[in-house]
Length: 507
Image 1 (cartoon, one colour):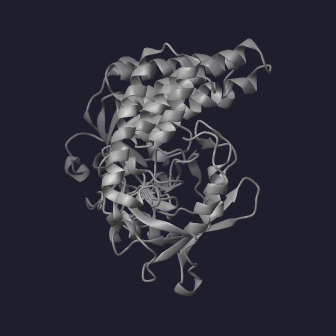
Image 2 (image 1 turned 30 degrees about the horizontal axis):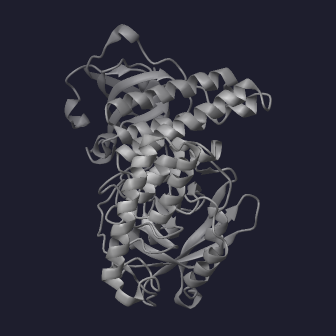
């Protein structure tokens, strides 16, 4: 709806008392719950225009409601005043004078000029009391919250919404992980929290198996084994996931460990039979492909998916701190000759030269963190808006389409797009720690580490809780490398390091 078109049809309400914030109700809401109280979290849709009718932002265009805490100064003053006067379901126009909006310092979209009056077509979708932060909760409150979140996950699981179920189970485990800090070491409360974490990770692994997200199933089963190294369910579920990714030897190791712990477990015995058939098929396939060279070459047989160093492609860098250590550099080659759009997105996010998101956050990796680290799998970063894997934004808008899947996840040190499903690329990326063929066709490979694999290795080995590094791993600087600054490809050195240090468990 064009806000300016509604002007003059009904009376404006002066919410601020000085004409600075006016409201015109387009559709009344449900008065039963009243207005959102101060400090409550509200959920709303909006479309913002200047008085000429030119649009500058819209949550509706992004397909995602906007949430904020009322009365806390996290939004423009006009919104705190306007939304506190609304009821759920109400639709209205808010007319906001500059001193209640952005004043003389508008965000960087270019549409809003200093001193502009703004019009917002808004709808209040709902509001609720903002939950306490974990650090504000007692041990009992944390356990209660974790159990509640786990129940939400189970409800999603029963509806076969496995992605949402996994998210809830992991969130429940993360909440339970804060309990030991509030209790006496070795006490009953700590033991109950660890048991709940274990249960949540096991459930998350099963949800991922049901959703055929093999890599995530491996990661969550490994987290469960971190709580109980002899857990048969965790060994079994990780073994199943590894078989599906072609990691037959690693699958055998997990399943045999489970079998030794519980020789009568029917599920384990059945999976061992399936694994035996898979190993036979894998060996026969390898022989047919490699002939007499079987066992002497790489088992990754998709040669079109392997890319070598090309001196014409752009290069860029991350300078990274791990905890309190001095910055260390990782440099990348971007495969612009194969994935030009995806490479350009990453390069400009390194340079920070494309302005801001619709919410005014700089489109820049600088200052953001590696929020997810899974040993012997991958390192994920690039969420510079939320910092926890739920945010991010590309230079083309919030999301852009998969460019192509020509390049494969054949080795450590590859740069690939993280996503939430097909055609949902934003700014989040990951660096592989090994070959990950189960990600082929789902994630776009667009670059490779040229130098700094020892830094990749260091990050891979940081201590984590629910896959989040315990010490901050921060991109303190980033940018483009000039041609004369570009390093040589050092990935082979990492391969030797991997041979010298085989991890005890594989994620």
